[in-house]
Length: 218
Image 1 (spheres, rainbow, N blue to C red):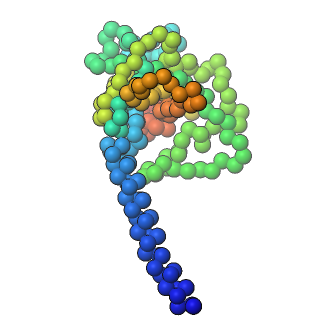
Image 2: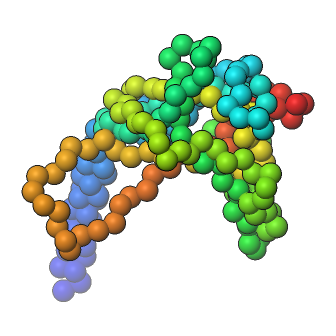
Image 3: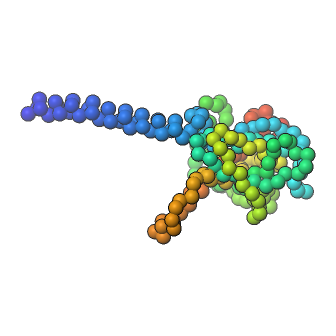
């Protein structure tokens, strides 16, 4: 009996390992089919440059930071946009976003670091304190009732700028996006509901160290 028992175990082990490997391969293939550059998020921001630009309101400085929002997946995405002033860099567009106060951290704060980087905070959440809430100092960002939208194809990018004072240890940016999916046919199913909400979270800590130091001098 014991020999039969152990034989069954040894027979099942390679089958389980084989099934696990097959599932891993399917998952890897699914990721490869969706993400273009595997070691980056499916949508991300890339720092372009810092310089002087036309303020959009009286409480904005002339110093601005230009970023590129890049679609790194094989599905088109929709970005909400608006017009920019004359004299703006070529191809720049306005991208709608909110400036959101960092959430309070309750309990013990565990220090962490970004993957592949040294001495860099993991995210803005580690920098918040229990007393931080939205105040009159928190900028409003650029969210308008009237605007437009742009569909970004895979690997396509959009250039936009952010005033320097929208970056601070006390708050971060949230850019809403959505997938540009084909419309379904027929009436909607009344038994289904809900809508996924996707935002790109970007903070002072996502900027290059040299840019952060330059902002601290202003």
